Amino acid sequence: MLTPQRSLLKVIVLGDSGVGKTSLMNKYVYNKFSQQYKATIGADFVTKELQIDDKLVTLQIWDTAGQERFHSLGVSFYRGADCCILVYDVNIHKTFETLQTWHQDFLRQADPINPELFPFVLLGNKVDVDGGNSRAVSEKVARDWCASRGNIPYFETSAKEGYNVDDAFLCVAQTALAAE
Ligand code: GTP
Ligand code: MG
Image (tube, rainbow, N blue to C red; front, side, top):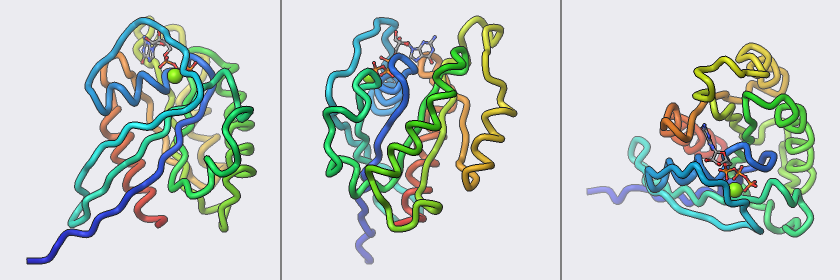
């Protein structure tokens, strides 16, 4: 029998404070959600194993602090990343506007060989809020943003309801694997 191939993929989650980065990871890895907000300090990772075709993939998902920007994490932290997940809150327009900065800053710090081909995935989180009535960014606007940056895959998610969370991270793994 063939031994399945193993891959360790380093994934970095970025976005403004409070958009739900930690919540999305906790939902995905532990199937847990908390209403309580506890700001992330520094950076820490969780791992999740999954099988894609004949490959065993370990996602090493790095949570970061939206409040601190890139101040405390050195360049070496971003080097070697296989995928970057950008998160914004569909109800707060400002968190969508800053995506541009997160995207650019990531590329500057990680300095990948082919910046145009580097795998990003965008998540528009908190679609559950107010039954979708308090949205500040439409799905179309978000998809256009992705299309103009080399067709970044886009998912609308709710960490609270678990909506699209597994699908989004599966896409992260597939996208990172394809680019490896
Ligand atoms: P920083 O660590 O400061 O960068 O913030 P973060 O992006 O990690 O946000 P966090 O996951 O801590 O979530 C912030 C708040 O939003 C918490 O009170 C969560 O309960 C809430 N929250 C996160 N995701 C969702 C969601 O999908 N829906 C709703 N209704 N609330 C959410
Ligand atoms: Mg956090």
